[in-house]
View 1 (cartoon, protein in one colour):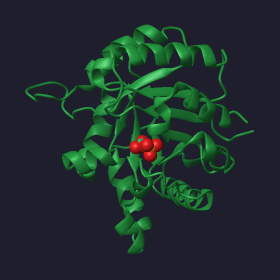
View 2 (cartoon, protein in one colour):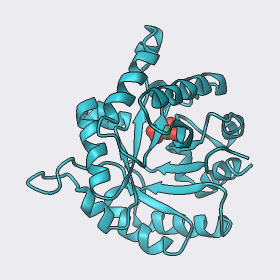
View 3 (cartoon, helix red, strand yellow):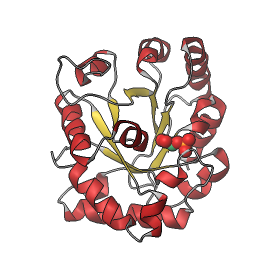
View 4 (cartoon, helix red, strand yellow):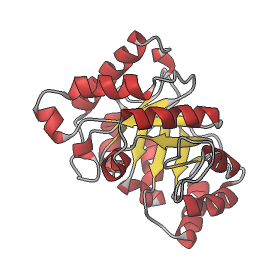
Length: 248
Ligand code: PGA
């Protein structure tokens, strides 16, 4: 029996069109048991949120935004407000994904503001963090994780999850070994406790080249409470396979 309900999250990134999303959701619905052991969340790009919501009504699947702006509303062309995500039925939002940090220069203060905005707007933040290859080689992994966690949670959210995604493992096919991932997760849980969060209840997901082939051995580690899946989540059959590995 797992200490926490596992969470399986699909990060579609900038992929799929409406018809693909509709087919995907139909396949996901058909393949999921009525009450899956894992909580399942999709993160489609913004224009796909309405068709996903329409296709998933009543299914045991939630959805969320891949990003949000920290402001409630205003003159921020190209951005999306948390209230707009909530209005589209989102219950989750990714904050601080490494591709946002890389492509949009989001630093820890910006990520912290997004986490606070998510909570304000009724969304559960999924705080993404992880070290780059250079940081790992320089022996800075734990310092980076400590800083990203502490600063990202500066607003002290009550309900949130964390995704440990080593940047060198994202989209590269180079998955962290279960030992290495478990070590980082144990460190993060210790830091959560040190920061005064109810660490035993917080889900810490692993992300970075998760596939049906490696999900089983990762999921077997009690430190790993689920997955944030990119590439392998684009195929509903492969995502269903990964979800099933979290059910044991
Ligand atoms: P990946 O992406 O599974 O394609 O490595 C994970 C992520 O970026 O969330």
